[in-house]
Image (cartoon, rainbow, N blue to C red; front, side):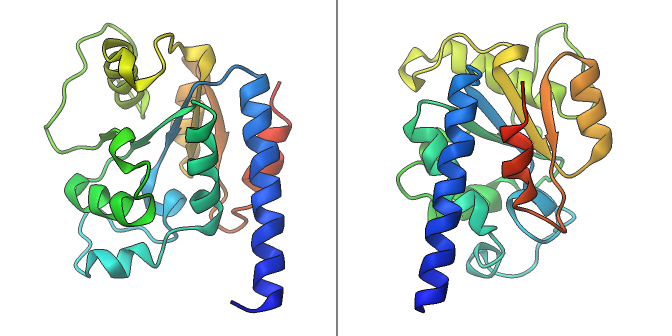
Length: 190
């Protein structure tokens, strides 16, 4: 790694640390992150045909810092996606976050989970509610009081953001063309 790359990486780490501290200050304990065009810089359409290693190369550096930092501060992270390729996503997480992957639930359109509550089922709300139920049911995960006001959705789809906000859940739009803007937007949360 060049000196310039190291310096850029250190700056990104510091910015992510500040963003995570803001989340802690706001009492956010659950971070729900979209996969396609958010965690990774491609849209797989739920039909990625390349290898897992090739998909790992599309992980955004921002999230390679943000997710471990959030986890270290007892903020649970989940992937909420409309993709059916949750096994492939699990493999990407295991390669990208070997120390944290097992703590990251995935909710996709794969028929492996069911939300039994009465909350909103549009957008990513049902996905987040299902993870919330899991976290509350498993005190060993370290978070037992997950609510809409302690949750933050990060997604590139404005519709999912609007639905989340309408339902009373915090949300930040992720601009795929300006990924690091997310950190500024987190710092602006109130």
